[in-house]
Structures are given as C-alpha cells and as structure tokens.
Image 1 (tube, rainbow, N blue to C red):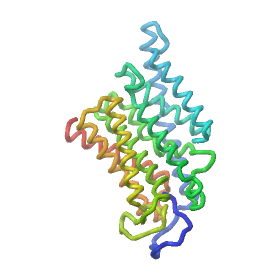
Image 2 (cartoon, rainbow, N blue to C red):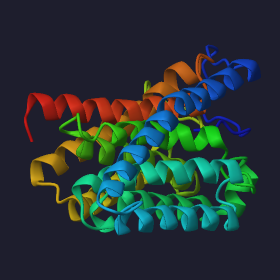
Image 3 (cartoon, one colour):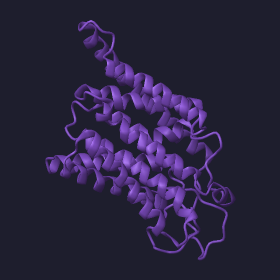
Image 4 (cartoon, rainbow, N blue to C red):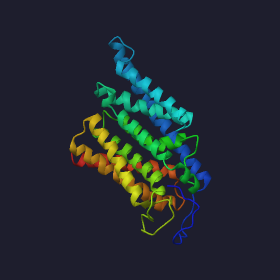
Length: 302
C-alpha cells in the first residue's frame, strides 16, 4: 500500500525509511528480467511442443488453442483501449493469458475449463476497484496513474502464477496453487483500492496502532472484508472452471488469505524500513500464497 501525505492520528515510528528510487528500480528490473528469462522461454517451448503434437494430427494448432491465442490478443487490445495498462504491460499480460490457456488446455476441452475465467474475473474486479472513488483517491494521493499499470506491476501480481501454470504437468497441486495466487493478488488490490475510501480506522498490522489511510502495512475492516470477498470470488470461479473439489477450494482460499495477510506484514516491516518496494511486496505475497497451497496440498493430499 502507498503512503500518503496526511496527518497521522498518532506519531509514526522513527524507523520508517522510504526505499531509495535506485533500489526500487533495481527490484523492478529484477522482476522484469526474472520473468523474461524464466517464463518466456518456457512459454515458447510449450507452444512449440503443442504445435508439434497438433502438426502430427495434421493441424497447426487445435481449435481451442487458436481460440485462446485470439482471445488473449483481443483482451490485450481491450486493456490498452481502457488504459488499464501500458502497451508493453498489456503485451506481457497477453503472454500470461496464454500461459493460463494453452498450457492448462492440455487437459481441457474448452477455454472455460482453464485458468482464463479466474484471470478475467481478477481483471474485472481490480479494474472496477481502481476506478471506484477515483476522485477521492486522487485527492489522497492513492490514485492509479492514468496510463494504467506498468510491466513490473503486472509481473509483480501475475508473474508467479504464470510460472506456476507452466508447471501444471509436474506439480500435482498447481491448479489450486495458481487460483490461490490469483485470489491473493485480487484480495490485495481490492483492499488497497477500496479500503482507503471506506469509513473506519486504519491500523498497522504489527502494532494495531492507528495510522493514516494508505500507510504501508495498514489494514482496515472494510478493506479486509472486500479483500476476503475478492479472494472468495476467484476461488468460486476456480471451482466452476477447474472443477476443484471442496478440499482443493479450501486449500486455495486459505492460502490466498495467507498471501493477503503476508502482503500487509511485508508492508508493515520490510517496506516501511526501505528494504523492498511495493512491487516486490506484491510479488512476495503471491509467492507466499502459492507456496502455502503447494505445502498444504502436499501434506494433505487433495
């Protein structure tokens, strides 16, 4: 969450140190290069493998895969038109969309049986939350830039899930883990965007001391409830699209909430001390959600 220039109800800790622009830039570059070096080659490999399989059947790609490519292209264009992201970020989002359709479609017969419905739901919920109360968030210094999200912001929220989606065939609990990561990202965005414009107190997670709205690591009742509702919505879509059983859904939801809470914890500690920036906080929180789902799913077979 972003810090705003608003008087604090109580004096803030002297330990607060904002991350330097240079360190934040290096972390953003690390997110971008890490994703490019890990996800892009694997995505290309998976598309090539599927093309070879389809070619042996006398086709370039299956009808489902062609539909997936076209839909991802249309969605990327829509994102640019709505100014929800920069063109470069929309292109990255298109690749992530492919990761969650072409790869998952190996075991599916329809796009509605992939991770795509959950990803679209995430976009719709976060886009709406970003624009609700925009004028007030603008006055508070919390409004999203008019040009939309940058590449590193897309990767911070969705990069981990796209990498995990590529391991669909080798990680037994990849599906609920991906849903958990998407649900965690949704919960954090809804809480960050809606919490500051809702009535009620904002407190620091680590001390429960009242702080200004939008403070790193600050949580509010309204924002938390909206975050939990957003996570539940993504898990519900996952149940429908991926036919998750009750235990898998519970694993995904609990893991998503763990990631959601980890985001506030990282914000209240590491981000407030200038160790990491907001984008790295978002990335690490989704990783917490994914790892929690994998551990829970491994220890308690789904």
